[in-house]
Length: 78
Image (cartoon, rainbow, N blue to C red; front, side, top):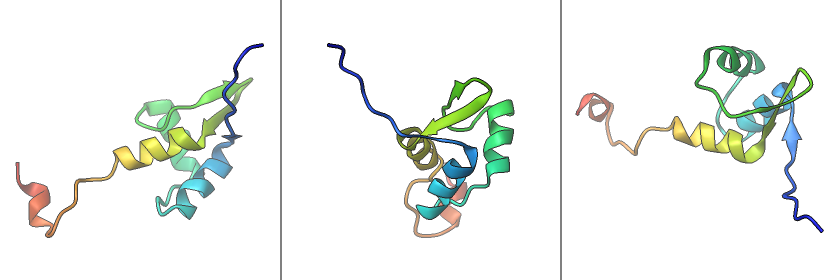
């Protein structure tokens, strides 16, 4: 018997809602644009429909976070 990992997939609208509910405000249009130009979360296709896993969405959102800072001046420091 094959061992299958169970993934919960969500469409673009649900993906944006999932991220927004977790504090990473994201619009479905942003995910659509990033799927064309690159830089967005990993997705799979079911026919023409892009599907995202919650794990991929969270990994992408967390990768966009900066390191902890105590002032905005730290963002400009090398």
